[in-house]
Image (tube, rainbow, N blue to C red; front, side):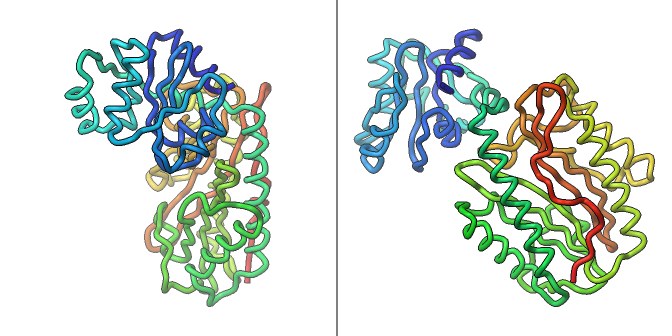
Length: 355
């Protein structure tokens, strides 16, 4: 059980009771999918706080050892009552989801309770996926691969970027997804040199351009994330060279994924190839990120000493971006396994000419 796993981690470090206010983390620990809740985690019994809109639903799904507490008016009054019931003299706070204004208000109203920094322990626990999570991520990746194949068949010169983005959204919903994981990036021509380009409502895809498509779906609460760069009608020789460099860097980094490698060493595998090819200054972002209930979560695949562990799910997505000419990015989802890795996204990385 995820909550028991968290409690064991918290007990080993001391921060209990622990207040979880990030809704994604509340969902991870309890299964709750509503828009308003918090969770006070403690050794013996934990307390789930929400209002009357979710009372019936929340009571029906609460894990063993979690008591539903109805918030009638003010959250802090309810929290104060819970802490009094617990006999708590201190409370550890989830740091990334506790704004200073909230902390200040809590300090003013929770007299006799010492507020302590609690780090981001739930996010750290979420880095290691369980088998149920991995199964859902595999399916999300499979649906996204299917969408790539669909797009390869239908995109033609003259299609609007916005129309392609709309088709992606429709495809996902037709295949059992709640929505896209994020506003997908459809970057054609010069726009492809901007890593986080905003898909245009006016721009049309033209023959001779590249089109960079960064997309993902939300499936049963988990996300996919994949990028492919395609050529429209013909291949520009300069961008073809860039494509081959990016592919070499991406595939080398994927091959290097294994338990024990640091994020810094993994980043360097791809970055060194791109730098040696003369484009080091055109690869400005990190190599990748964790993927799961959020599109971007821990671990960050960037210079650092964090070691990858079995059942971490990450992305590998190097790119080269040349203003005025275009850009290329290739991204896959990769699962760290006991002896190496499993590539979850299977779409071909051969040079693709569409239209």
